[in-house]
Length: 369
Ligand SMILES: [Zn+2]
Image 1 (tube, protein in one colour):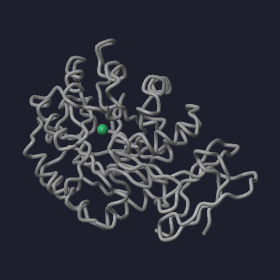
Image 2 (cartoon, rainbow, N blue to C red):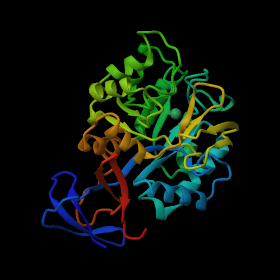
Image 3 (spheres, protein in one colour):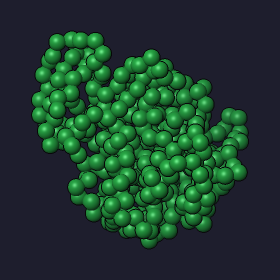
Image 4 (cartoon, rainbow, N blue to C red):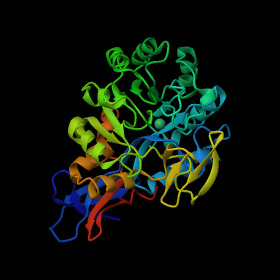
């Protein structure tokens, strides 16, 4: 079925024909009112699961992964990095092996993200990660996970203040793994050392840090100011105040800023209390996922499409910049190809429309996948 819309780069009216999950033709059409803007679908570098399926679960199955992928595709996410967080060795090895075994999903799950377990044990920076499984960096342990993952762990989030962190960062860089700073209480000097050792990213900057910090020498200012670091952030309307989002947009600019929804394994579930990661979490009626009785969020109950709409409708970000931060920056950072609207490219597309209630995005036909 042909898709009519405006090309996201040129603005020209086009008709896209899709066959078998790829773009078969792109031809110009006469202009008319009401055409949506067509663009390649989202890439999200941090999704922990959905619908009660956790990539960390020792019981993760291929069907569970397929269910998460289907849910993500329904939110316009063309591809994402399944993210495994702090946990026991065996559960993570099982998760990576299960993901790597799904050859038919390799284009949707091109790389994996290991967030932890090499993070700060302190309350606050640790966020919702289970304290009993937090530990210092261990290159041998990582290498065993990387073997289980078929070499597809491309992004590692760690706290650079841990013993052995700098040598571990150098080990990651030799293996072409991108190192991101997160869940940290590092000093400014430790953050600069990490960047010098090869860390190039900040994980969900402004979250995964202490609720109360020194006014000047803190992890947010230092990472904002360091041009060596591209920043991820969670613009879901819950994780960050509008003023901090404005600072991120102006200081980092969309070329060095990528949005992630950081979807919790509980994303997509109705409000209520659930057991996850060995703890209890709550999905609130507005879709937040919280650690009951604390100020800490445990990932998001929303997906990347929601973040895209929040960026445009709440923060006044342009369509082009919102697309850059949700489809492009993270791909470039991770060395992944950036899809285009051309023949032969994947047909997992999104359509963006301006409505009386604001900008809306929806997934459009990708050939019946
Ligand atoms: Zn996190």
